[in-house]
Length: 201
Image (cartoon, rainbow, N blue to C red; front, top):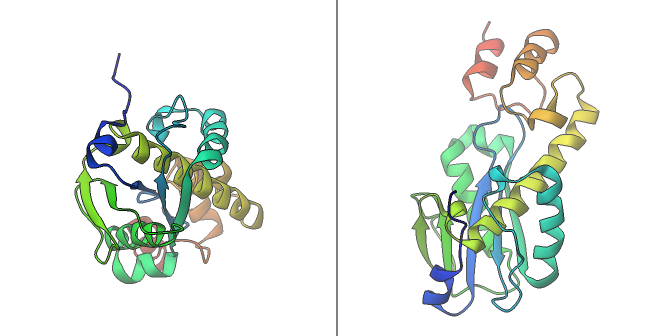
């Protein structure tokens, strides 16, 4: 049985520590989404974990629990920005925007992954696989995942046939078939190879 994330890093740092994570690097369509979450140490929602290890229903329930007692901010980078500056830089930009959107700057940010966004308003530490180690980062992963999935579900109503309501824009068989049959939408990332190849065919 794998260990659950804990609050030890936040407690050691003290102050107002934000966990920061992003979702949406791999999809062929839609924005990349980041969240920054400052948990209240006296009201830590039970059951926090890496969003990928939770069911959709559990993630949705946890969003309400997180937002009740925590400071939460979302940051986005558009498809146009992804194509202009590449997905890695767009993800870092979304994370910076999420931190900047908090009601007041945190004293420290714990960033999921191995890179720290430029221009943060506070000190920061990169935590590899942080969504499985830090409660604040796991909370951010849940917030970001639910927010992005909701966007892709709305876009699926406008652009049916790609299965975005189920695959969130990831390159599933249904999505790739939709690209072949229906073509490229304004929400597709033109710099990503499967989309680029269709445009250049």
